[in-house]
Image (tube, rainbow, N blue to C red; front, side, top):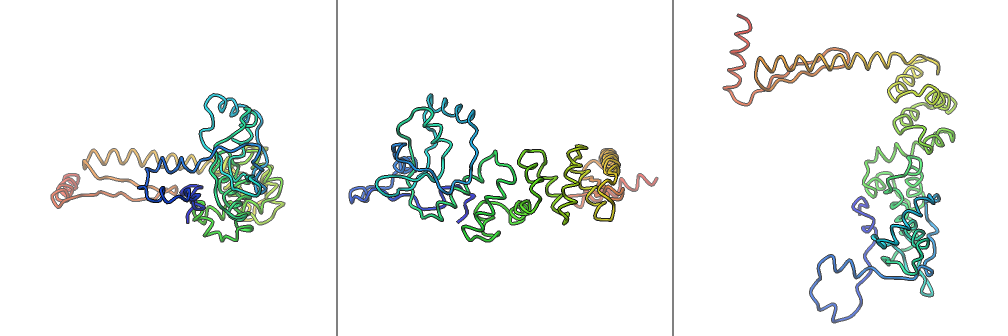
Amino acid sequence: MALGRGLGALIDDAPAPASSKAEQQPQQPTEKRVSDLVNEIEIESIDVNPFQPRSNFDQDALNELAESIKKLGIIQPITVRSTENGRFQLISGERRLRASKIAGLKRIPAYVRKTDDQGMLEMALVENIQREDLDAIEVAISYQRLIDECNLTQEILGDRVGKKRATVSNYLRLLRLPAEIQAGIREKLLSMGHARTLITIDDPITQVKIYRRILEEELSVRKTEELVRLIQEGASVNASTDKADDNAEQNGENEGFATLLKEDLTKVFGWGVDVKQTPKGNGKIVISYRTEGELLEIIEKFNRLKE
């Protein structure tokens, strides 16, 4: 079952009330059936999620959400599971729960689900991954926990979270980077593009040296890739990356020439002309035709050019 379709796909919905009358009634529209799953429960009866992968909650953002809740209420219910003695355990929505307490709410709308500890952990981790403000290291840690604690392979994990296996693998490889570099990723000092380039270096000491140079010289991903290539060819960490700028400039010139040539040829032949040029300067010209008549017309234009 793929979790990319949404968190609710993890487990079955809570069963409808067991009454023969309800069973005999025709199925209600989806909106009605979804609303039946939401319960208003006491906030004080909800215990925190012991598997919560998220540890940091911005207080200012919580206060803003609390103000919104005061005005509009809870738009998206939290998700809980029932435990003993009429209590509940939070599965997802801790930020909404915390903000609701700040707003002074006594009760909160919640989906009550049936799940075991592993299912609860999986849901919490997947919800965490789906947040937009996660840094790459947080995503990687959640992926690793899903593999270790939920006994998933990278391929199955990719299906669950709606990602390609290669994408999952790239995130997991970030956890092999030195702690200093991981901290830089978490602090947004380093982009995912930079990190993917550093992964290709095996030596941690060299990785850290490159990382520090990236910060000191504000190297672009392109320059970092060129530096890593030079190091792999035997150069030192202090090697010049000017060639990356030269290549970029040359690529720009090549693309500009190809565009102008395409425009000129289109004026001559009228349609279907494409010019493809590589950074090295070589390439090909493609002239397409849809009918035999168009082909004959192209040949005629070639003959005119020879005259």
